[in-house]
Length: 254
Ligand code: NDP
Image (cartoon, rainbow, N blue to C red; front, side):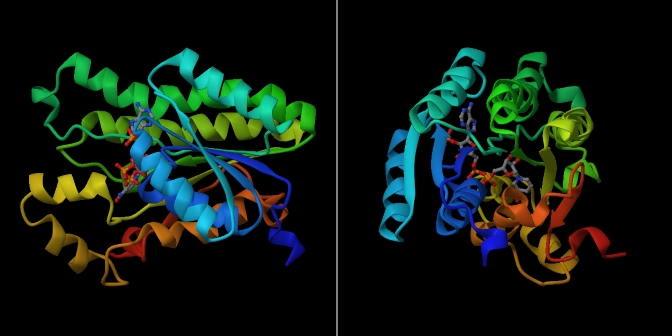
């Protein structure tokens, strides 16, 4: 369907070399976009590129540390220069350090905030002139259930995920005049490397998630292909500033 067609579009997905980012990248590539997967782990990046190319899509890996401003700017400007345009930016790279607020060091706080939130600012800031020149653009920020709720073991993570939604709303408001839409996706509990660690570190988490999620399962990265295509395509041209849960009903369960 043309409304969802991304042929000729160029998309960058930070953390696109695995997990939810790869699930989104696969959706974008299947809809026709050329996708730049940005991350630190080149072996994961090569495997992800192969997976997308084998399925008939176009993808490449860019070695990037989103904690480093120069690295982010080189990613965005490099992709726009190589491909002649930048249409979609997915700010997905993220980490968590699970400790109570009184146990977390300032350095650990900065690691989480810089990775999850400051990188979204730097990448969006770098992407804006390219999208403005294009006359259109789509920015998709990855929040969390912790954009809505909180947990005692995730103070910096919850702050970063609340912040990314509000940062996105500010961008949505500022850049609507440039035909740039900025939205957030709020994943529920998804089976990825990130949550494999959480299941190890937080006793009883697996069962609590199953019990609380109306869909009665953990999400999979492939559950994010559809929302990525929707928010990257013309289908969402009048949708901006939203935060859409993709959570099997977790956030509406009383
Ligand atoms: P993964 O650990 O599988 O993916 C995280 C990705 O972020 C990796 O590909 C990693 O790449 C990348 N990344 C982390 N730090 C950096 C860095 N400094 N520079 C570049 N890339 C970096 O976890 P998920 O797929 O689960 O997480 C993706 C996003 O979804 C995160 O923002 C997370 O907070 C969010 N989320 C996840 C949920 C879940 O249940 N899984 C729930 C709610 C939100 P590399 O390995 O190369 O470092």
